[in-house]
Image 1 (cartoon, rainbow, N blue to C red):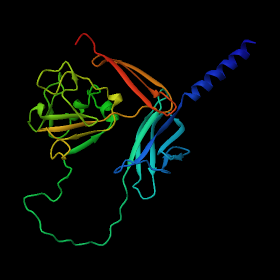
Image 2 (image 1 turned 135 degrees about the horizontal axis):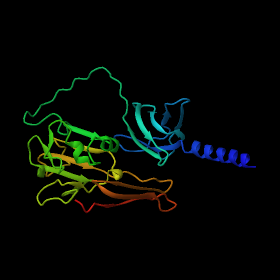
Image 3 (image 1 turned 120 degrees about the vertical axis):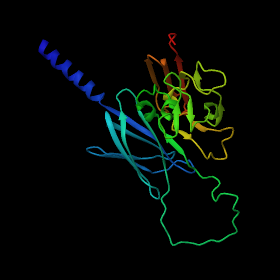
Image 4 (image 1 turned 135 degrees about the vertical axis):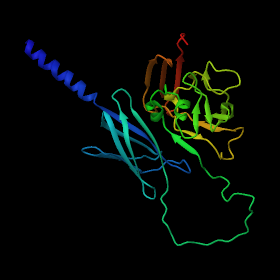
Length: 285
């Protein structure tokens, strides 16, 4: 009887462990320019054996039973440039959400020559984008010594420096840190840091939880017309979307950033998403 119970216990533990080694990968695929969802786009897990799916009428996709670990995914759509996303970290405790924007593919045709009277005191392209960098949440978390702070990651870019390790002020090409414009969801914010000093845009601890942020844009010169009041640089941040299918909770603590708790999930049948967080900074600071 004891041997039979041991065998049953072994199979229960084995099946539970096997189920924990896979996870769901989901997200939305949109057009990069118009931000409209792409219907029927293909996403493929580049594993053995490979598996894939297509997006629904709202551009959402869902891949189940993806093994835990670092995985790669290939995304393609007719008339668009396909992309491959490597090193996607899949963990057993949280579903992976991939928000991907595809660019339209263009074919080179025969040249067309257009002549016009040019005004030499104006540039050809008034909305030219230079000295701009986009980075993701994973880059922020993987940056050594960054303390999950987007400002400390920006300090590693060319032409950018930080004052010292105790603060995250951003110095761009020798300009004052107060010349950096911070924007969150299109709204200018004065200082996104705890324990900040009056008249600065930096501080010892960032008030922004990196787990809530989506891809961020960092510009160091030649700002587009939508940005104003910026002398040194622009930091344009955005919130990510919460899980639209199930409730998820996260708690983490660190010696420097303190205690953090987050909850996300749908709050009604129309899939309205809730995404909230709480942070407590250690009193030792």
